[in-house]
Image (cartoon, rainbow, N blue to C red; front, side, top):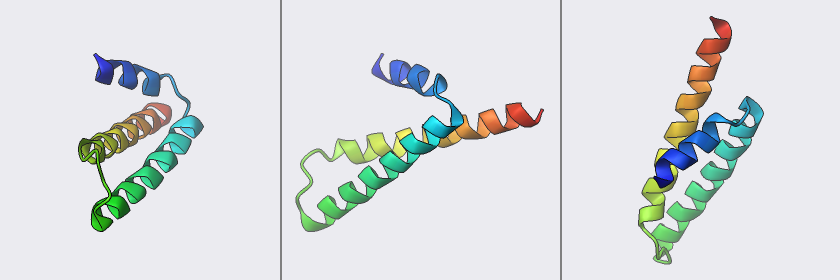
Length: 70
């Protein structure tokens, strides 16, 4: 349920908003990797969630670009 809600929220965003969200998630991913390297990471599942959210956003960006060019 949570993933479908997140996906519908992402689908409603414009391309600029998706780009901003992607940038935010990439920064979070960097911070999580840094925390894991230093042994300070508590929620290890968050790394996977962020990685999958980045993939979702990139997929939506690509589908919107294809739809705009068609």
